[in-house]
Amino acid sequence: MKKDFMGMQPTCKEVHRLVSEGLDRKLSIVERVRMQMHLLVCAACRHFDGQMLLIQRAMRHFEVPDNSDMEKKEK
Image (cartoon, rainbow, N blue to C red):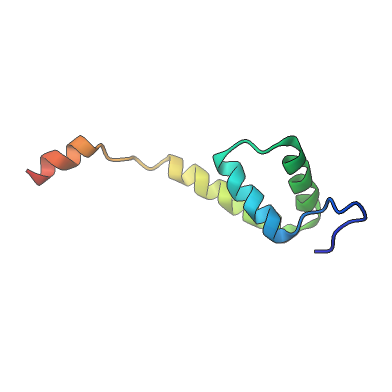
């Protein structure tokens, strides 16, 4: 994707990085605005964003085994 006249439009690669980082930390306002600008015009990155959100939601439903339960089974 070409940069806009102000150089504010991020590349798909940068948006993928921002989407991933946004799952782990709060993005700055500049990062969020730049990412949202790109998502408005790039269907592939919107799809990627949706996939990442789906994975995040699915992972929240997994039960994490308690280590003490695992140790009891080993004995």
